[in-house]
Image (cartoon, rainbow, N blue to C red; front, side):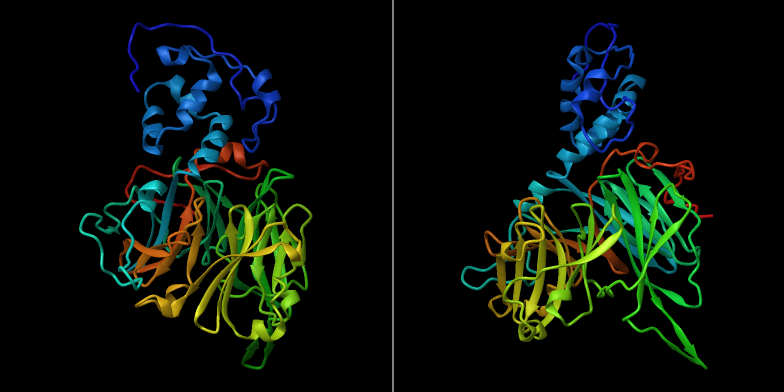
Length: 454
């Protein structure tokens, strides 16, 4: 971007995203027409209509946008507007993702972020042979598989004893068990908040090490969901039956946790991309096909069961060795392994309608040389192009349903305990979170930066 020529000064009016509704979540034409901000500009590019300027800047690579924030105060104020953050998020999710890696190295936890270009990953050379597809670790010399290390991370933070809860709209949620606290972090802007007033697990209920984080479009609020199970103590024995589960829901910025009792128990690793239509989804431990998928409406704060595919009879479900729920193409998706040999992905085209379940693709495990069942039970994301990313052994693997090929494109270092796909964004916590009970803190300049939970 060439910014040359004589300095000029004029007023830019009607900057979007600065009206009375300060939330970044929706791009509204009324806000764009009525908002007004006075800025003095010194570059010819800023002589363009302001909506065109935003469109140009939102298409830049993330690193270039970070550089633009350092050009001058005018650019910094432009790029700090909620309107730009929303516009950029809508476009970057189609082109750029980051892998958030949680590492525990000698009791020093780290969160490392690696920015990846989706097109570059998709165009890489697949791992396959001419007649028999191979998912072994052979790699093309012209497309080397780069290791994801702490040294080549785009940025990383000290996060000792933190657990990744989830990612939503460029915000990452972490849980600190010792402090019994949740942290919401924007790693791009270095902003974070610590959610207070977290109730301790009473003797009657124990935390199940399962939480969720999501955004409610109806109320424009972010909420944390955590699962608790009832605990019985008989002498020296402790019982935690899965039939009695409670959910606690917290709206960021509020001072309370609301409780919902008799909630279906979530299955371990029963969801990898659970948020859709303002609802949080998970696979239950029930063996009944009609009770297998459960959803929690974040606005109404009530749960319900969703129908499964028509072929999910009791005998069929009993032969499923592993199952999880995610999002594919904006629709709810079921991924499961049947009889330890067939991996299938089914999509609910019309949300809540049983007859709309459609098979998207299937993988016959025995057809691929070196492919084992454990290679498929850690999916982390369906991309916009339909590719499925999985964690397999010490690598991140991409599967293309169109080509029917696997691609081992990133190698993980030892000590990596969790891998999450995170969409980077410029959403400021000051605009995204409501309420007066949250203090926005900033990461220091030290490397690695530390998150203060106290």
